[in-house]
Image (cartoon, rainbow, N blue to C red; front, side, top):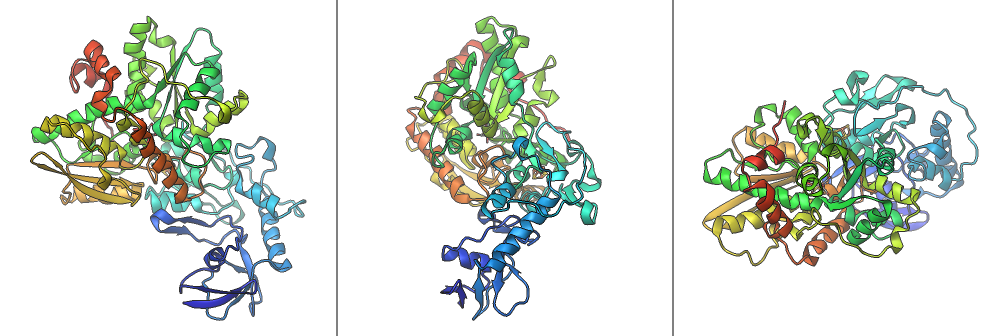
Length: 574
Ligand code: HC1
Ligand code: SF4
């Protein structure tokens, strides 16, 4: 152990601890900007580029960045001296000297860490007016906007993209004053191998990386009398949106969401959970089919669009491995524009399907041409949890005082199996609940497969399904997925099925969720809420959803049949 003094108090911490961590352990909170500790992944962004966390160390002539400096025996640290505070304030003033001064209209206004630091450090004037950068914004993609003029070179996005996701899209472009972070040769994001997972957006402290904002499109549709506008809400949104209205992480707001959407004027208020139950009908059928007919194994889940982009780019030789199932959001859109349209006697061209998703890649997924029919996309507009909250504020809907209401029939019923899609491990658990009963013919009494749960990056379990030992792998975060994929390529994989989600924690940690600043406790609370919502349901297996059974009976025929194939399955392209 190392003994030192921080602000006059004796502190004892393990060897290798930084001054920042040692201070935190005794509740001395030093402000940071570039620092990012992704505890769940054992990865720390420690470039010490911003100098916001400087402290005084006795005997050292200059201030020391506390995030990078390790403690030593006998060290005497002062975090709150006038010199340390002035040094921090100066670091922020320098960052602001060439930062655009458009806070009032910036997409990150009131959510910007640089703005918060300027406030907390009492910056009241910017003493230097630096030369400004004048780069063009990258608006090439459906998912994210890159504004290099707002980049503070904290390199958090690089750590996320290169170390956690192993996609390697982002690095320093140019040199010296002109440096910013972007794809090599500054090509458009849309032309890069970006998966649009949005994890760089989730950790960007400023508005250098933000989502494409589609809220105006939704208002336009809602105010177009010719449009029949339906909406669907992803599983993970209901356990996170409350955070944007002052509620605790993990507050379940399903009923309030339905009530809010009704007040906004949507014509049909549907649940992506219905799409998830439908996905299980198809995906469990496909798994059983592959197992019983010597099909390609392992089968990989395919509902995460960033993951789909990742394997198309990085593993083009293995496109037969993922399930051919479209994602729940696309399945629900397809059913809204066919079965629902027929029932309501509506022209599908006049239906607008809006999705509320925790995810930026869902925006790009909705635009994929192979997921449209007669040039009509199955999903028309995707907004994130954050954009949804923004719209509620614009509409002056007081979310926190709304009562609970239900989703609409006929695409609104859901089971507990579908809500657990929102967390890592949930999709495969939902599939096992159904596959078990289909393979064995026995009733599954205990539906909770706790061996599939958790937040470790890679997990595995064997589930007894009759005579079959069903070997399951789970990965979240694309770097972890890569490891499982490489094993498959090398012929070393022992799994029958693998679930992969691109974002840490699964969709609960999606790039469109309320900012959690890498705090895995928030992810954990959202995960607990997802499992609680499952327990709240009377039906917990997808094949017990009565509206889904009626959909097959009246329209689709049998699961994994011809009609289901044409509407609910897809193919992949390298
Ligand atoms: Fe997800 Fe899915 S779980 S991908 O994380 O399969 O986004 O929540 O909507 O489509 O259902 C996201 C969440 C979501 C789909 C479902
Ligand atoms: Fe990398 Fe994901 Fe950001 Fe694309 S969206 S640059 S893959 S972190």
